[in-house]
Length: 298
Ligand SMILES: C[S@@+](CC[C@H](N)C(=O)[O-])C[C@H]1O[C@@H](n2cnc3c(N)ncnc32)[C@H](O)[C@@H]1O
Image (cartoon, rainbow, N blue to C red; front, side, top):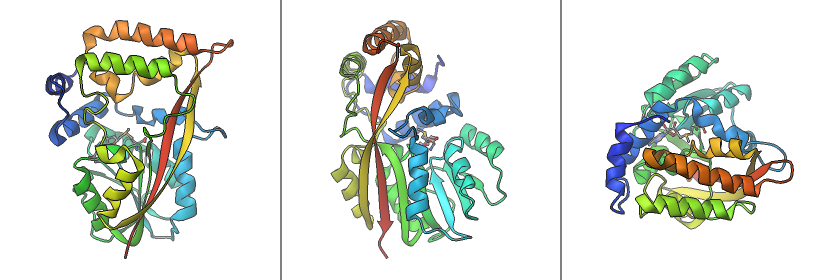
């Protein structure tokens, strides 16, 4: 457990039922990803019915929909420590890859992992990216679109850097479509416990309201000159009760949970996972994931 003055600061603002301002949300995310630099590929353990993770889903969409040519440019927004960039490098498409993330610690790790000379990383928030106007063919975003704040200014920046007809291909959580095999007792416990401290949970402002429904997403992109389609799939994590607990402890909401009460909360979560285990001790925990494709109209 890693303590943080930033979490203490933002917690104070959430305790009266408020939501994070754009400034505090950005401070919280950069602080979180500095403390847990490199841990953002945790979603590689969550897979669909074919055993594929959501990075593989996004990769397939890039291969099918992006019409890339040698020399095309792909910008991966919220690239973290560059797991997705590493996958894109394997496509062997002679594209220029640009990873963008505001967290210095993540960008340092990303720079250590790149192997193509044409790949580069830019330390920036998505609303102010130091790349040229109409210089990017495809924007990818794996598990970061729902975090970009201010969202409208970030979409303006997407529209600026993309060529006409350029695409945003993104994977993000789909809270509007709860996974069929989610564990209801777990969701209920998390809501109850979080609301003891943060009455606005789950709307504390880490995730953008525009990413909370398909219509809101479509409208937000349409307002910036994009045509949108989306698709939702169920992804699951299978493991022992202890493994599922270690996974959920890395989610943002748990990082906001007051440290002095975490031990009891962990015991309660673990018990729910044990109760949900099959006779081999395996728990299936589900998530609904959205794939979004947005095309910039010429
Ligand atoms: C859940 S992680 C996902 C990282 C990576 N895409 C992956 O899936 O492996 C979210 C990333 O978004 C970045 N991020 C947060 N706010 C951002 C913003 N406003 N603009 C760009 N990136 C942002 C964080 O620093 C973090 O690295």
